[in-house]
Image (cartoon, rainbow, N blue to C red):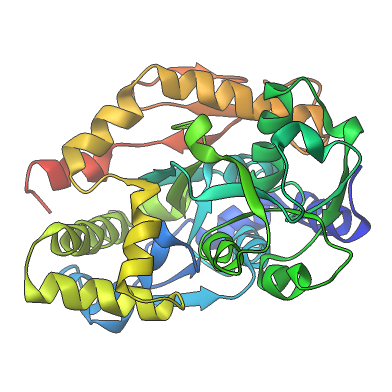
Length: 356
């Protein structure tokens, strides 16, 4: 059942006028705003901003790009959905449910990674996954943690009826875990690794069991991107420059990783451990292979079904196909007359060809 706060947030987003939002953004402009939150696979965005790399690429295309870090993940998506930001780091599921489900046409500019162990379910009193039955589970309701939990429950013959979901902000997860009444949490890194470091609890399920399903991406308002291809080029150029730096065995690469580690509240070793559970696409060609794979279509169908079953695919949704999802080959899952989420390889292809 929807938590009242989550319900109000989603309804507010759904009731915003897509026409008024898109109309205000459908124009050529020079200044852009991007937002992100702390997560292993998104730490490069903070470094891109702090290092001056974003400014370098923005200057190349005669634009200005301001990158802002949010402490609350869902709030960052709500701000993007409200038109306050042109682009936002979010998962495939959250993009489909909140902005796209609310009528905001959104493009997956860079599907930078997928969680391969970065999301996990911890039982404070230990046991196995099946022993979660009857417990309260703290998580960011209706986020990928919720999706991830549902997938885990299915794997042991349980369902959400067997547990109670307690909506908890990602910003509060660490503090909440100290409460003696809390027995189970589903969360992502760096919170996941920090909780596990306390040795109070056992990881009983993680996202490596569902590889390729929790996709972490930089999403951009489609109309803004269409009218301002310079934004797509600048973001893609800056992203792959930093990813190349991270993959290099150089002092500069180590310095970049150390900076990201510190920003995420850990050390270099800790951050590398998080990256090991993150399937980052360091090379554009690898990312293109992922977004061109037929498995992506199966994943999005599964995600859409989860959202529909939880009543959060969009107001008036009659089926899991209510919102159309367009893939790089032009094919569409769902309603082709209501395409609101698009996997577009245009800018990643330019990066692969060295044409940015």
